[in-house]
Length: 195
Ligand code: FE
Image (spheres, rainbow, N blue to C red):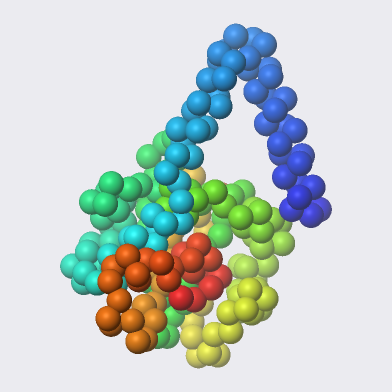
């Protein structure tokens, strides 16, 4: 099943559910739209990029972020997102280790920090293959890691969301924090790209 086809099926199911909820008077028409708008407002990979740049310039913040992501991003007025409180676990790429995130069960994702998830993240192919053959999948994304680099795949759940802290590129010592944030892409925060 292609991502687009799966998305269309899900959209149809969601619309049907919305209609039923409204017909039975369980939610007022438009209330769901408002809830979704509120949920998505401010959800952007710029948030994850801001967290990353702060961690690159502030070693104390970085230590707090890796120890307790939930509390550390709250210092910047951020959260992983979601209706229920979610624990955020930030995993750091180093010279010898690389991290990548997935939700093997469905599509759990730190939406406020990364924005709406790309369709490939929700695809059956990504969810099943990145666990079995992460190196091959990353190469398909154009990320070729040295053979000695250890890759860890983090499986998200409804309670725990992950964000990758990418490595700061060489030669960026003179950049300001906003300039550093501008280098960070969504895929780098998922772990399917480097910065
Ligand atoms: Fe999920």
